[in-house]
Amino acid sequence: MNDWFFEKTKDHYQFGYRITAKLFEHTSAFQKVAVYQTAGHGKMLCNDDLIMITEADEFIYHDMIAHIPLFTHPNPKKVLVIGGGDGGTAREVLRHPNIEKCVMVEIDETVINACKEHIPQTAVVFDHPKLELRIEDGVAYVANTTEKFDIILIDSTDPIGPAQPLFGTDFYQNLNRILTAEGIVVSQGESPFYFQDLQLHLAKITHQIFPIVRFYNYHNFSYPGGTWSFAFSSKKWHPIHDFSAQRVSHSGLDFEYYNAEIHTAAFALPGYQKKQLTGLQKDGDES
Amino acid sequence: MNDWFFEKTKDHYQFGYRITAKLFEHTSAFQKVAVYQTAGHGKMLCNDDLIMITEADEFIYHDMIAHIPLFTHPNPKKVLVIGGGDGGTAREVLRHPNIEKCVMVEIDETVINACKEHIPQTAVVFDHPKLELRIEDGVAYVANTTEKFDIILIDSTDPIGPAQPLFGTDFYQNLNRILTAEGIVVSQGESPFYFQDLQLHLAKITHQIFPIVRFYNYHNFSYPGGTWSFAFSSKKWHPIHDFSAQRVSHSGLDFEYYNAEIHTAAFALPGYQKKQLTGLQKDGDES
Image (cartoon, rainbow over all chains, first blue to last red; front, side, top):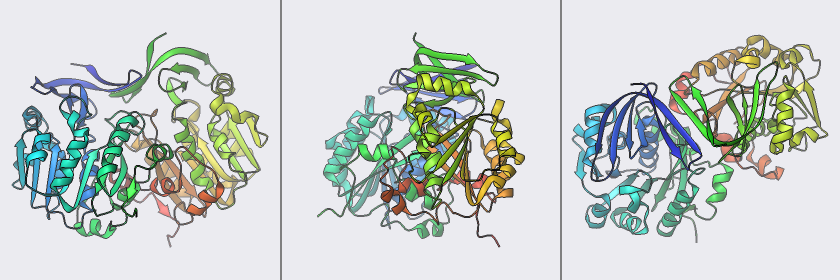
């Protein structure tokens, strides 16, 4: 097999990888899940023909969704991951020895099974004793659970298919309810360039609910355009003012992407993105 | 016309834009120059089928090649641009009113003529009274000129075709000679992910010659992968330690990408890139 897999954005841009084998394909109740072997990016997971991860650069996304809030909150114990069926986010969360429990709620077991079989690089976490894996609807879970979490990570796809309610106000009100008093939510925040409408939509929702809302960027290779954002929403801890670079060095952890300078730098937004988010970011010091 | 223009990287990755018209094509003595109308990125300039700029995101590259050194050097008067035939780099240089003269040396007049006719967004600078445009070989120019410059910007393509000598030691030794005692060179520094061999090659050359060498990143959309670097080489001024955010605000200039936070943040390199550049960046404080 020698073919190309392309992902198209807005009918005017596309990018793709040469693939040498299709390793897995199954259409679940929620979406089509596929795993390909690429020629240059390792194995690749796709949901509904959108690239979720490639082995070559998944470290970037997973470092940045996990370590920014985990090194901002001074003492996180319980983490909730919504989505993230490949396992990479939970894998990074559980590298922090202070975490006592990571609950991961993935709606589609097909994603988990595909990664267990073909992408052990991320699925390795499914054997971790501190992981509580739940195959159920994340929206229903956050509406009904009585557990509380210090950090919640919304590791979702774009707001199509099963991920659509994850971009709604009700969902964020429930997140607010199940967060501890010093809790932090980090959410997949879309592209500030190609999907600024979605980013603004998310900014407006989080701005209504949380006293601290900041967007931060990371730069991977397998999302359209490469520049992508996370939304950081927090009840108390500020991602820059309350961040200590010493905590990173003292942790003894070493990352392929994240480091203390990247932590702060990620919140420096380019002019065009700052303008789009005018009035929607806030630092918790509003009177 | 409704077709796609693709740029392929290393035979395993490609990206492209939908094009609605070919506006210009001419093969000069140096390269094939083409201008297309794209469906989503404005007009696009290509040399030898590699994307040089698109109107939609050229501000990112041009902000970052120009404003980082121009806001680091406290009093730059004369700037040399090697390459940069579209005009965008000189355009940004000459937004700084303290610049007395910008010499631009472009080997291929075809690029300039194509942009004058089709991309006035960047070619507008060719009417600027402070611009001295020279159509000649940049390598010969820096070997022979007796002029001195405060800042030199190497706005080159990849090291193929006419740009190949721009990645050589001789060229950088000449740059060193024609720089003032407090001069700065910024060079197109390739991709830390897809072309790390080229980035390391450039790092080794600049490391031999300059007391301060740092790489910084920017994130546009029309280069492979989106994450791309500049090499910052300096005789005296350090891009972080000698940078004052106040100079940016006092300048009254407003940018679509660059700002004072981005200035510092751009030098925060991800772990994988820091590792690659171990021992090759230096801050001028070596004993």
